[in-house]
Image (cartoon, rainbow, N blue to C red; front, side, top):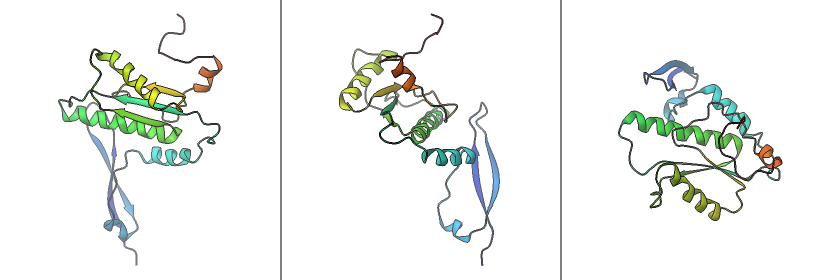
Length: 173
């Protein structure tokens, strides 16, 4: 006989007050108590991601793409900052799982002589040499997130334009 067991799933939101919203969900399975309970940030996003992961393009048509991110090896000074960095990295992993691309999280020491935004270029150069089959590399700052995980980066458009490198800028200039 199955007895309903109340399991607490936490739906986490990142906002200015660092609060989380909790909802109770009834799970009609006694075995649920015996298994580890995973934290689910957004059930709808998880369902969409599972559906999209099955709809990846064929291997022959897929563009080899690597998302590169990283931070300095110095630890963040606050627990809130560490939490945001972890959630930001999870966001990038979720995006790459949906779109079938690879992700590289760089924790290595930056090359001497390069500071700030310039430190990423030696890392990208090393990754390009070490991964010749990857067609496109994209640097994304460690504290940046994808607000729409279903957004597809228009790499084919860039290739049609004959571009080998895309940098942010203004269309009118």
